[in-house]
Image (cartoon, rainbow, N blue to C red):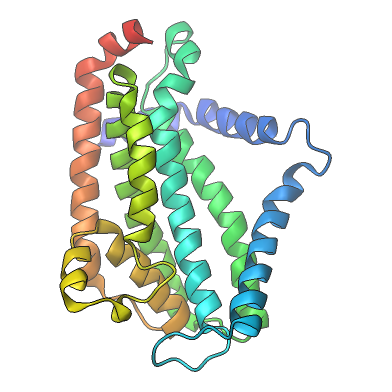
Length: 264
């Protein structure tokens, strides 16, 4: 781990250069450019607030706050957005960077780091706007907001572990990426993002406990909606699974790195 950290630090210029290049390329032919990073989440927050809070008068069970459901929804969707972005980029990172891998000699660990930084950069922009919304509506949770940092760390570890494991497999079996895209759609609806787990039948609540995203999503919602500290034991399962997947992904990559170059 120490050697890996030193390698990442030594190639920090390469990593940050690629992050900057991807950010610029994304908005290269756009008139508004990076402003879309602000406009898109701003539109989403506005729509959820107006439609669900004011028009549909949607409420969470046992919560009377006007903005509670829209905050609940935004907390889940923004968190899921970071997760799905890292997964999507992770499972395709080796294929997308095939030319770079074949032409330039550099530590391949830089690639998942680039994926993580890009995902966190986009998440930071969106979540900053969401935080401003919480402040303006007098819904800011206070000091418990600091728990967002460890929650995001757990999310990133799980997402990149799964993403890189799928990424190695996807090089040899391209069906993996397409199949997991379908699985991700079902996974979204099996996670309490647009609904409260309290409304589910008891037997189904027992089933979704095996969902590693359950503890992460509900922790974000607990902080942002209920203004309470996360229930930390709920994060042990996704963190442990994420660490196992990170080790598995790195082991697969080291073992098959030579074959991956040939396959690409």
